[in-house]
Image (cartoon, rainbow, N blue to C red; front, top):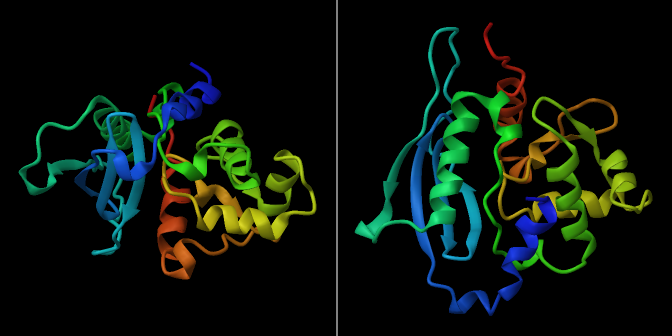
Amino acid sequence: MSHHDIVSRGNDMKSLSQCRQRTISLQSPLGKIQVSGCENGVHTIQILMDVPPAERSGDTSLSCVVTVSNGQEEMGPELQHCVEWLRAYFSEPWTVGRLPLPVFHHPTLHGDSFTSRVLQTLVRDVKVGETVSYKRLAEMAGNPRAVRAVGGAMRRNPVPLLIPCHRVISSSGQSGMYMGGKGNHLKQWLLTHEMVKEED
């Protein structure tokens, strides 16, 4: 399935307010993560920053534990798919390039806006363990002058981790802002985590 299919399968989108959303919570190495979605796909991911990120020691496997909020009924297939992807990402980051992404069902990721184009380019072309500058990402998305707009697109990303805005850094090589500056330490953690290689 192409990335275009991943995004466009939500084009039966009615108003998001008509979706029956479910929210699940994951205890992750970054602390609590909340994932919201409906039967059509994932709407949002929020990293709550309730605890400092886990320290990685050589022999400790990182993992996610899932709890379904408010005793809600079983999560749908796209939320389940998202949880499986996140579990793989935190335990074996080198494997997620081979895994299909869940379907996204958020208006920011549909249509032909520059923000949508930037986010789709990022998820398609910048792989685990790679980084890209704001300037280069603007060029890749078809508008080399739109560096500031790329920064705006990163701030509007509704599904961090799945769409890896943490891989976008400044041209100087500095990691730059994450989550409005509040999550800069998480960005560094994620970039370091993605350098972990499969053991022979």
